Image (tube, rainbow over all chains, first blue to last red):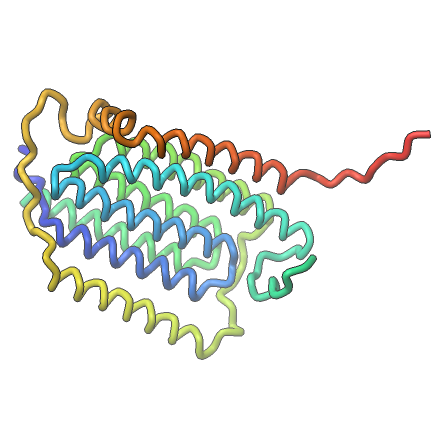
Length: 106
Length: 174
C-alpha cells in the first residue's frame, strides 16, 4: 500500500474529532459518577489531539505533533492530581456521586 | 481508497467505543471502552504519518493513564454507579445540547476553509513524524515549554502524594 492510497481528506478527521468531542461533552453533562466525568474529559482531550495531528499532516508541519506531545503530558499530570482529589473526597464522603458534593467544606 | 476504508471502519469503532463508555453502567466497562477508543485514535495517528505519537499514545494514555483510572475504580469500589434517576428533564436537554454542539462544529468545518487534500510531504532525509524530526523541533524551538512540563510533572507528583497522605495524629512523647 503506497502512501497516496492511505490519504483521507482532512475534513473527515476534523469531523470525527468533533463527534468524539461532543460525546465527551455529553458525558460531562449527563453522568453523575465523578470518574466517568473524568474519563469524558480525557476523551475530549484525545479528540483535540486527533485534530492537531490531522492538521499537522495537512500542512506538513511537525509542530502540531509536538503540541500533541505536550497535551498528553499535561493530561497525565491532570489525571494524577484529579484522581488524588477524588480519592481524598471519597475518604470523607464515602461516595463519588457528584450530586452529593455540594458543600465546599468537609 | 484503502485509506478511506480503514478510516471508516476504525472511525465507526472509535465512535461506538466512545458511546459505550458514555452509556455503560459499570465503570470498569467504561474504562475498557475508553482504552479501545484510544487504540483506535492511535491507528489514526499511524494513518496520519505520526508513528511516534501513536506509540506514545498507546504507552502513556492507554497504558498508564487508563491503568491509573482502573486502579482508582477498584480502590473506591465504584463499579456500579447507575445513571441517576434524579435528572429527568436535564437528560434530554443535555443530549440536545451535545447534538447542537456537534451540528455547529460540523457546519463550521464543512463551510470553512479547511483544505481537503493534505500537502505533499517533502522527501527529506528524515521522515515526517519520525522521532528524529519531533525531537529536532521539540528541543530547539520548544525547549522552554519542555522544561516547563518537567516542572509541571514534578508539581503533579508532589500534589498527588500530599493529597492522599494519611493525616497521622500527633503522638505525645513524654
